[in-house]
Image 1 (cartoon, rainbow, N blue to C red):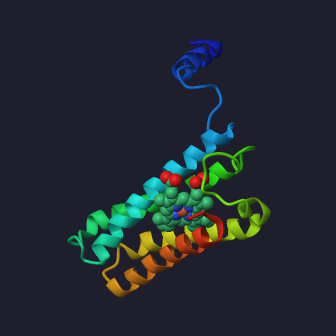
Image 2: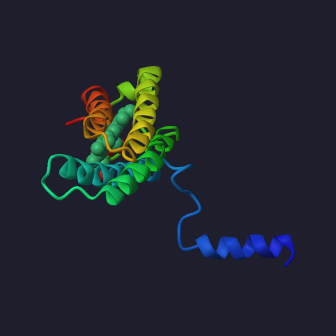
Length: 150
Ligand code: HEC
């Protein structure tokens, strides 16, 4: 197939969606990051339930949740760079844009903590696992306290 034909087929595939998307449009960027945070929460909450013995610990499942959390951790932060992503139906506080380096620093620490949790999940040291989990949670709370509306 000629390259223009490939391109037009691709355009047909996305023609149902608007040409503008999460990386061009502020409101789409807001929805994109909120959806990513929603998936983060589901994985995080399931691990919390296992650690707090609200459901049986299944090591394989826990490892999978931890690995998925580490994969998801960078994703919402792509939704803060688009023009207009600070204005719309969002709980993101304006301080994100006025204190960008602080926000980015917590986002980076959060991502490192999720990677460490994925590593710890493969060991059999429950105490170390709890610590690694707590370190992730500290970053959720630290960022929300400073940068997210109630
Ligand atoms: C570096 C900052 C930062 C970190 C780290 C962070 N969040 Fe958030 N979170 C935000 C911001 C900002 C919003 C508001 C997004 C919006 O409404 O546009 C948000 C929104 C959310 C939401 C609501 C999504 C929705 O549907 O509106 C949930 C749930 C959430 N975060 C869970 C978590 C959990 C769980 C963690 C840790 C495992 C975490 N977040 C880590 C900044 C952060």
